[in-house]
Length: 206
Ligand SMILES: [Zn+2]
Image (cartoon, rainbow, N blue to C red; front, top):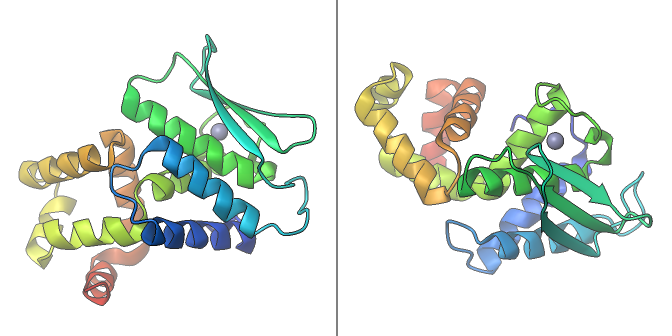
């Protein structure tokens, strides 16, 4: 996973979240409130004692404010309650879902907060975590395996064949995430594993 800079607690939390998804038979596209509830459970289970500036999550609220940007995370004074301000810069409902998941990443990774421009490495990692939350790897890999099962189809994807891009677009709709962010995510996955590695991983998830 493209999670080099995050600590093991964050990775553990994400793994716990995917287990909770499975145990609760979460269906895709994941409902935002269900996602938030399970996220809280996973985060709290992996921070039994106070860790750094993260003290667990009590409550997460979403506020549709007139904030101009995409999303803004406002922790309470005791750092246990969070408000996610959803701003006007989100282009649609899919974008809002991604922004909410992005802010969830900031909740479990306090060191990543306070970077306002989205190009910073920490911001990009939060984007990546957000995609993991919305498109859990076990489900995503299953979809990729189904749609891009042959080597030639995968190569076509690299060559940006229209048919393959259309398949990816359908997949992004299935997860209800913005297409352009989904493509970015897939590219990162491919980059990490290279095509052969991906094939190996796909055959592992039979
Ligand atoms: Zn951010």
